[in-house]
Amino acid sequence: MITAEHGTITNEPRQITLDRPYLERHNGNVRADRATFFLSQQNQVDRVLAEGNVTSEARSSSDTRTKQEQASQIQGHADQAEFLFAPGEDLLRTATMSGHVHVEESGVQTMLGDAGRTVLDFAGQNELKKVHAVDAVRLRETKATTLQQPGVGNSPQDFELTAPAINFTIADGRILQHAVTEGAAQITIEQPQDGPNAPQQTLVTAAQFDADFGQTDGRNHLVRVHGAPNARIVNSSPGKPERVSVSDSVVATFLPQGGIEAVTQTGNVVYTDGANSSKQMQAWADSARYTPADQILLLQGSPRVASSGMATTASRIRINRTTGDALAEGDVKSTYSQLKEQPDGALLASSSPIHVTSQTMTAHSNGGAATYSGKVRLWQDSNVIEAPSVQFDRDHRSVTAQGSTTQPVQTMVVEPLKVKDAKRNSGIISESAAASPIAITGTKLTYTDSERKAHYEGGVVAKGPEFTASASTLDGFLVPRSQTSASKSISGPGQLDHMVAQGDVMIQQPSRRAEGQKLVYTSADDKFVLTGGPPSIFDAEQGKITGVSLTFFRRDDRVLVEGEASSPVVTTTRVAH
Image (cartoon, rainbow, N blue to C red; front, side, top):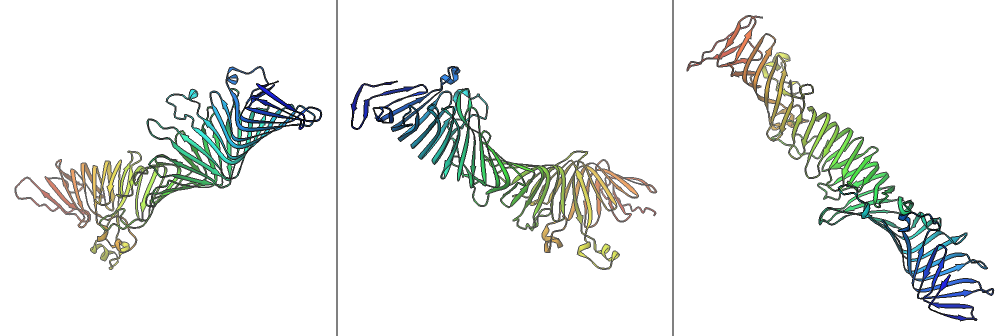
């Protein structure tokens, strides 16, 4: 059916010109300021040229649409439209819309399209099959606010696909089914933010995109977009550097209510957080899955993360693209390199790499600290710390290790070999032999390398050659690296200067046992000084000795006893062998 305000008919050429015509067909209608109908010799319409404010509306041919479907319409607008019909038939074959072409599907979710020119191909009974859009093509989806759930973090985002040209495949005359871009294409995602903050923006580019569409409640929406090759994702927020990830290909899946559900990159994935070179985080993996709702990038397939001289591998690594925090899981291995030697340090003082293995690792971008959990082993050269959980601060070279009575923290320190012992053993003082190990365990260890003090808590046990000491707490004071032979070569184990143990102290040796409340052990002369309780020492042959202070030695039988008198009483006791 055709209606118009005014019309003109000319015989040569055979054409009809209508002002403000309205053309209605069974599956849509067209309006314009003017339309010219070009007729064949048989007075059949061959071509229609509509000019000025051309608008069209497409509707479903079904009479069983739901309320949701009835609320959704597809409307188009252009400066000009040309319709070509099959010769001798009343069947539309192509329609070309040009000049500020705009297409909109309205309803609970809005889909918008813009182009300089679009060519629509029809088949059968005027059924639209294909659309070829060119000249700055833009396809947009705006979030469906009526479908958002308050308090849910996966609110949809605004989405936009741009390309020099896009080819669309149509089903049932009005349902978008598939689209393929031509030329360099780009996807833009606007992630809403809470409060007055500007939205985050994510740009996805690739040499080509192909998109699949679906229907929910009669409404067209994007389901999946695949891009390849040379896929690239750039995430930006106001006042923050851009986070960039590249890969061979990318696949974006979409929420039914609009917006991207996830973006998956595969093949040679490389991620960079955009920070300055000293703190920049980079990551590599076979695949990466990014979810805009929580800003998490999940790396799998031999993932590796490097930042500020620290590199970590694991089974999978999660990175928050907003905060830069990282979580590694499964067979975690970290290496801290680019370290400067610390002459005043001890356990972690050399320039050698520091290694950590564990089951999980959490690292924060705002500092050099990382927390490792599950069978943690941290070591530098010969110095090793083992615990269920370790918090390591690279910048301060400090460690907080947490264990339990069944899984204690374990460390090892050594005492320099004494001159008399070296002569007794071989007659020569050997640097390689200068190690008398002491293993220390407890439920917690706190250590900062600049202080050279290892503080142990909870059921502490120190076990060395010819003695075992237990206490509630123990502080081990270490020799500076600059004063050890290790400072001239690869660092050996940390060397103990002295240690102070407190609370229910007990020292056991092969032939005697001592108890007290405080112990000071000096490595240089193998001397134990026990006070508090009062202290006591028991020998199977000599019996029990008690005093205000007991001083005894690891490798001989002397015991010095200080009593209550103003002048100390010294008693020497020799234990028979």
